[in-house]
Image (cartoon, rainbow over all chains, first blue to last red; front, side, top):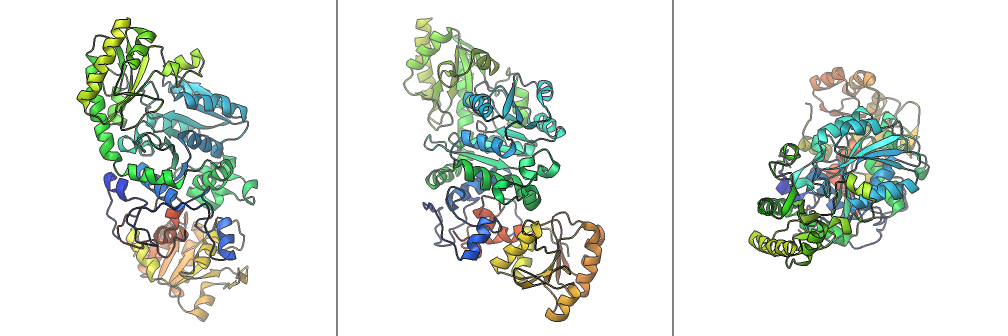
Length: 430
Length: 165
């Protein structure tokens, strides 16, 4: 063992998965076991008191899931991670670890529609208020912060607007107010952006997307930096005695580990939205090729975007890779290897042209997902964002003619051939 | 020598058999108790509380001072320090007098004078680290908790002493 610093590609293959100590298995075994025997009653007592590390029950922790967690923590540059059943549960459990009824969060309005609904409907019913701020306006974010605000929340690359968050500025604003910055980095993946490097305190992912990369599993993960001062008084859930754990004060007892410990031993324990070992194993397999896949996704996305940018029937494209994008400068800073492979464009023919375009496609899959190896397409106004009010939808930048692409790994010539057919059908309607 | 690398901490823990813990608390919500209890039940080292206010913790006899420990048990391999930074130089002098081979200052126990004293006396010195966390890093405990051990290896049984799935 030396102090050699291993690179990202090496960690994508190895972090969290040394050979299995029990068998020497080189691939991570799938520990499909709900529960784990204790060595002794004393060992059990130490485990339940959180004084030693070990497995109890797979709702709280599992060796295969832990390997995925450690790999994600390594790739994001975090202290540790908690895997979750989905991206939505990763967000929900992050908020529940920080806030309770009467508390408040401030979020970018340019978020996945399901997140907006979770924050403004479900969290509101639980007594946690959320203020959404549009237009990447950090002075408006600052104005929305109140004494009960417990966190700021943004996406690295907004869905579906494609806006790139100024992460350093968001982090500085959060820290000036004594609160953490939570970043959903699903569209970037740690291969393209590591928000913790820019000051974020917590990173959440829908692992279903590029981390899985094959459109197979539903999963999520919370990664935390270990740098936020949880004992500073703004987060009594962490710095006051917890009735859920023998009046333990997490911040005092666990220091830098206090958020991760509470997220796992109280929130995951009580919410129950754990990742299955089978899904964790699939995600570990997928992460091995994440750096290679993201490079290929970006290459294809750039080709598709430049094809569309030259096409007469395309009214606009929102892709931060393009020179005329208002987010191009931010993308060069935060996403130097590429602004992801998901972007939107508008057809001159409007809503009906958008429908005709999608209905004519043969190779692109019409699904409510992104980040698959297979190329995907959707019309947000009639699908992912249809639960939102028109005002919330427009605040999130979704317009009726908008089509969202998630560019996959196929031969780019085949993808362009299919898009040409779709555009021809859209023109026939218009 | 001031130990700053992962490999140095791993080697220190591997060669150490006894730890005298200055400031060990019997209060089960205190961080020092968590560290004491972890090392005691893990059993890789013999951990002894140094605390004049208690006679034992969890059945392990406590000594009122490092001198009293050394008189009966000999020099400890590691003196683990859970005291406020201002107390660190005095604890260091006592550790040197007791013949300790290494001194380990826990999180936040940062005192330049204490570090200099220990280094000049030839002790191995670890600063602003937790002996429980570092033990768990090498025995697989951190990994089993989804924490980033920072370790990469294709050799077998790097977790052998710890992971008990």
